[in-house]
Length: 261
Image (spheres, rainbow, N blue to C red):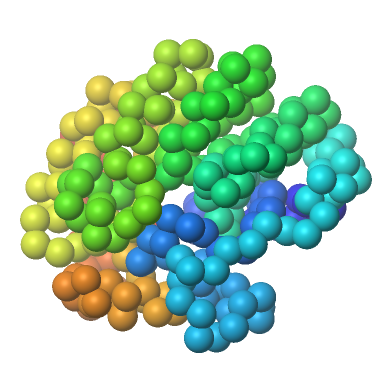
């Protein structure tokens, strides 16, 4: 069975991207984002060796075709399922040649499941024909921490450029799909306020349903990996509040709905 409790669901704090349900079908993520928290989850659950470097390990859940077929999708009819909580669902390795995300969506959508897709990839464009047929069941969200290409190249080395993610959302919205943005993690290095305001200006033109944001937190090896590329951040509660206040101020300034986590 593919659907389980979501690792991105903290209802009491407002950090809930679905009905606390998620579909995860891979271990690891080839985007290799240096800030990612998922490496810690995989190693805590002993799914990968402790010494394995994030971004270098990846495997698809065994027997996925059979798991899709045997999952009782109708059990979650009308519920919203996050796709995905522990990896990007539209990695090239997941889409080609088997088109796993499309097969999962086809099975769930037929049964009346609603999906909130969270991705940094632009491969979701491949499935716009399917998604547009089920507009009422789809909420497409992209993770876009910054529009600064140089910062993105350092921190998200194998993810598509952020401006292409924004363009993908615009195309989805033009098809009548609900879209949203997760600005996470906000990396508070020199110029972060300017970069955040530039992003919000672009988001105001897009007009997403919601904009969520979160500052960088220390999780697993992420701070060490960032230091290796010259980004040295020392997270603190004070810094979290400072970024949060600025984020909430930008929501008001640009008349956008959302919240800071």
